[in-house]
Image 1 (tube, rainbow, N blue to C red):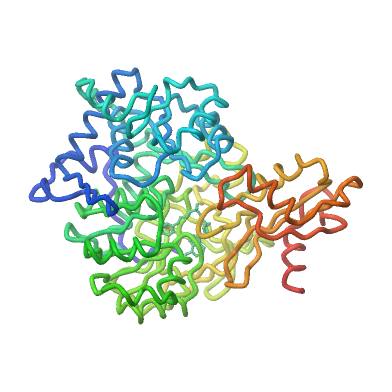
Image 2 (spheres, rainbow, N blue to C red):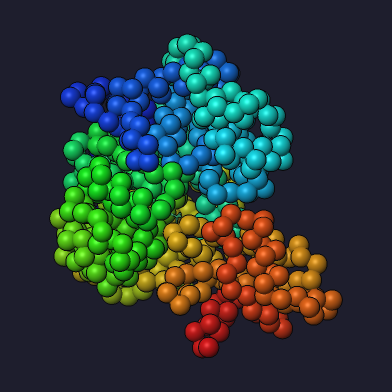
Length: 522
Ligand code: AYL
């Protein structure tokens, strides 16, 4: 089924040309990015000037086409300037989760082939641990602020070197975010300049974002949701992006009120706070016109409660890192749609719903795996053609691993997930990674990790653990503590159950659906 919207034309240009070639008109001196916690801002002209200087500084360090630079920092206006400076230097960004431990960061640095890492001084412990493990020298680690022994952003831009010629084309890799996809460990997702430009134009058709919009950006720029839908959409529409380095409910409400933010992008857990937390009543949030939820399923009733309490429109979208990320969303003028749904396929997108058992396409109202084709579909996974082939078929459809239904108007609802992936507060938790880690414990013989619902209905990682003969004294808390000290907080195992045996197929694959069935029986 094709999108009900007419196709948009995708120009054959780099994201850099797309965003910056035409100047900023009467938005030149308007704020492009505003740090909500400090009030510091960068106008469009200042932002662009900084991007050019960063590109010059990077080029002077020998960074150019084919090089990968890792960003490991919280949401700051400088994050965005560095992102675009790296692209302007004809290089590629790999964006790392700012909660990562040194070990998790090392995996991404090594796998992506990053030769430079840019961070902030409070993250230096983890950054240096990761860099060292990945074989990068301390010289290759730069900081946005000043830190003893490292070049800073100020040093980078003070080189005075001109930005190099822009040789990047639409087909070049712009960014390598990491995603576990349908199975296995986190993999580099190859997104080209064309992918990113396409998704901006596709998203633009659905929304009513203008140069007067103020976009809230507490969701991280390292994740494709923050990167495309907040950071780059803001630049594209010449809106103002209000940043927050980390989420804090009171600060979020106060910044929203103070800067009259009218468009909030959230993941479902924030909807719970907006619907229920008493403190929300202490703020004047009449500025908020639209709240958009993505990254995990939003409960429709909860969404309606938020819309009622804040007297605004609540919308839902669906996407995936591998889709740059948005493939479906509700348009701004359709606040009437069922909030349990994720709206329509964006322009230029074709979808199929396919029965995972029979491989046959299903009809209206029937459940099937969502397959998506369009200019926003990733090229593939970096260094992993097997995973690419298992995810993207010869016709160009990306098999999402999500189960959806569509109605006769073309409105899609995501109803289930057939892939391993667990989502904790919208963040990816790859079970395979936790299982590999748990198996390194000398008292654990076997394990399987799945997502289960906690008392609030939130998805949380649960480990089923088979003890070694020597592990009689192993407790649930021991297991949780063992994982917690080695992974970013969102990947913590939050429930443990000891069992006799992990159900497996004849070929040794974990039968996750049997474990899930066991959960619902209890
Ligand atoms: P990743 N409903 C149900 N599941 C969802 C939804 C939704 N609305 N959105 C995302 N997911 C799940 O790569 C689904 O399982 O990208 C999907 O395969 O971290 C997985 O999350 C992808 O996780 C936007 C803008 C969504 C961004 C995004 C999030 C991209 C998250 C909608 O408009």
